[in-house]
Image (cartoon, rainbow, N blue to C red; front, side, top):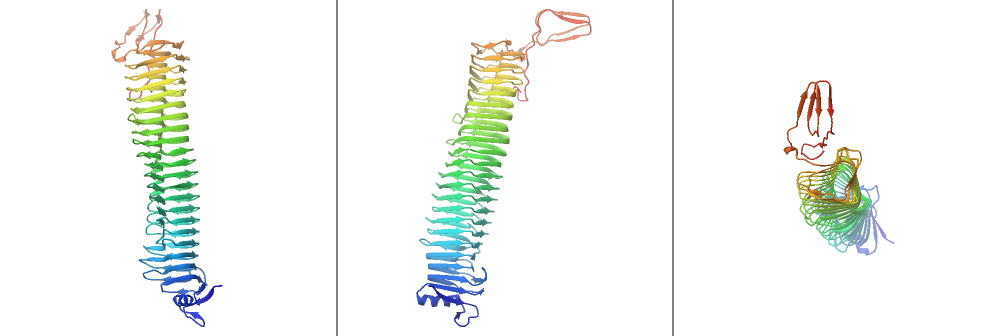
Length: 577
């Protein structure tokens, strides 16, 4: 049984006037001691050795140990402190030099310094306590934190370094000038915590650290909600981040597993991977200020079950060596691009659904810029479903584009490869090749285009096999300028005015159509239209093309069919609209 010692500011029979004298008496006995302290202010440094309890007899906070400088409490042994207020400046307020230390219902104030310092080999437990203005530091030590509050730390609220192993549960971090929790070359588990208002990343793992985060909420971080840097690893489960610069950032060889997380209203990016990896499962990004998922500088994440709603751009993979694999992607309601591969980035998308965005997939860059899409549905795009630009390459398999302006488009020197794809209910063209772009399609089907089924113009190259173009408002297939290639085994059907308009440069073996097939003429080289004006009876023999008739009375007799070639509408850039 522990020996009992009482302390009160006024002393008394068998009562010590200060805590230090009680500690000295206990040390002489060399046995477990319980020191019960009456409410009051004690301006003395405490040096505790052995098995000792320091307990406030009044309400928590009724006993204060406040020093103008220096360490207020230093322990070595097995020490429990309950209900005290400890404060100092310019040093460790509480220092566990060896053994174990437990703080319960205790408040520690360390303006600009360290509230608690757990040194190498020691173990500190913090329970139902508050730490203000200073940080809690575990350096090569063990730590267990439960139901604590960390407020207004001058730098990091809690740091685990040099091989420390720390568990933090059900605690709150607010207003740290730097990080809420920083882990450097150490191991930390954070569960059920709230982190708000940090100056930099709320939770940060650095230099081969291990950080496991679960069931936490993070808000209003000045930097990332969660950051992994320099080969850090760990897990992030069921975390919600709002109002951070980035929801989560992975960089410099780091490789966490992130599951079931939500990143909302981030000022820049929901998920950022730079020169790192990471596996992301069933995560959601809403209203990202710039990009929902940003992969750069040789980043290589694997993403499964991603949901993106609102914001600006959905997924971007950019930079030589950057690559990303995305399975089960759902994107909706973006004013810009849903999926983008840029400047050497490589992206693979499987099982994709995108709704109500301007452009659903865009690639732009050199020949190393690629995108592969398999099993996708793109609906309600205000511009294009797929757009390949530069010298990039896009491969689509089993992709449907429905309700928009242009279904599948390639321009400049890019390549677009389509297999078993469908475009329906577009206003301009189901598929289009412009510039020097190359379009290769097998079993492509275009249905209900208001204007053109497939368009090739400029110096583009076309290779279309076994494809169908049905019910196009203007023309099923339109080949103009110097575009050339193959149109093999294809069918054009419907009730539109023309089946195929061609320039003689596209070979069309086995073409099946009941609609007209006519050669395209360059409008710039056409003869001026004929104007006929007569006030009585006009009889026209032969074909009429782009002619204007003005007749004052009577009637017009046409003894041969008048042929008018459909003229597709164009936008201000000269491409079919």
